Image (cartoon, rainbow, N blue to C red):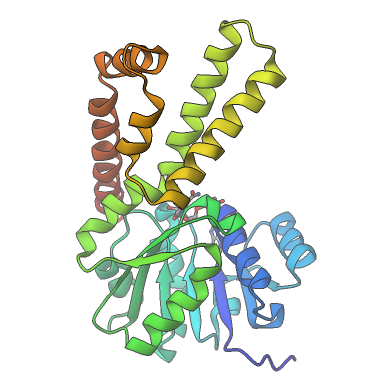
Length: 275
Ligand SMILES: NC(=O)C1=CN([C@@H]2O[C@H](COP(=O)(O)OP(=O)(O)OC[C@H]3O[C@@H](n4cnc5c(N)ncnc54)[C@H](O)[C@@H]3O)[C@@H](O)[C@H]2O)C=CC1
Ligand SMILES: O=C(O)[C@@H]1CCC=N1
């Protein structure tokens, strides 16, 4: 039995997002002996144990028992059943952080037996390389110290932002939780178009990747609004103007707006469907 210097944190679910968050915590210097992961899939348990040295468990209740904080990182569709498995252990009053899309703090609290300290967190996959961003919402049962602990657990993945109104967590999910996929879709579309223009695949890939990386770095480093950065690329009557007008004539802004609205609505549907 190890005696970690840090309070124990238990991840329930050891899939894609948990792996990103565990990797970030270990890279941030948190002792692997203070991290447990519950994951029913043996190959995932082995990979987490080999790659990060964390303790793994097949059953959620075994990982959660006695841990100061829990990170619920299972799919929304299994959250209710997982909470039922954990309801007895929850009476020890852990800090409960759920990263599931849609599932509300009221639902989590009810499924865990009531009166629990619940935080909803919405990270994204770039957390794996420290370039993520996480939206956070805490219920009133979460103390200031536990808010600080939440930020300490998630900051390795990138900056965090508290949201005062829980209903806006669906908007956070739609913008930054799902957002990396919109950028990857743009990359896929640009790659196809570049190849159709006759560029070799590897050259097209270099041009597309580095253009997205460079533009994102300008957004991050200059602090200038996207509209100003865009104006600087756009010579009057030039090539960029021709492309941007074509995107706008195709309803680019409207379709992005509809996509984000639909994603937020899907969050609300997930909540209702799993109640
Ligand atoms: N993938 C993403 O970009 C993001 C995902 N999320 C949320 O994170 C959660 C997990 O998503 P992913 O990691 O992508 O899914 P995933 O499917 O990769 O991971 C979920 C894991 O939970 C495990 N699991 C199932 N039942 C379990 C149980 N009873 N006890 C312990 N583990 C169990 C599964 O075997 C699986 O490995 C979802 O609720 C999702 O809404 C949040 C932000 C971003
Ligand atoms: O697609 C999903 O439902 C999850 C939540 C945000 C990113 N992936």
